[in-house]
Image (tube, rainbow, N blue to C red; front, side, top):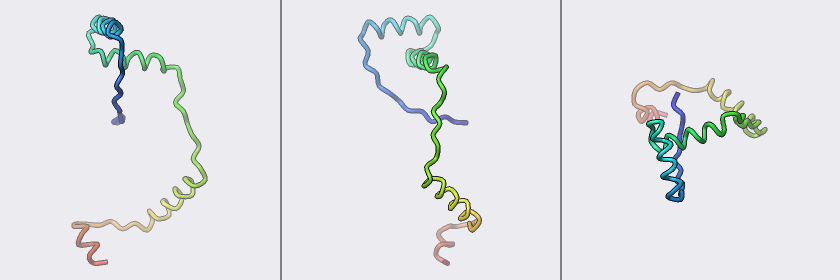
Length: 85
């Protein structure tokens, strides 16, 4: 499974950056990897938030499931298939 990721930019005072680089060096990992480790350690005991779907989303889901039964499998060129409709 591939987890989607995003980048963040963090401005640090130079002495803090140097300290973190030193700590990362002790583990033989890059600074970014060490900061990621610190963040993961901080949130490791937290539960991932779960949200209940709204009535609108549930309705749209049910409609999509019904529509799936009417789906048509297209073999070959989709353009030609659409031209023949």
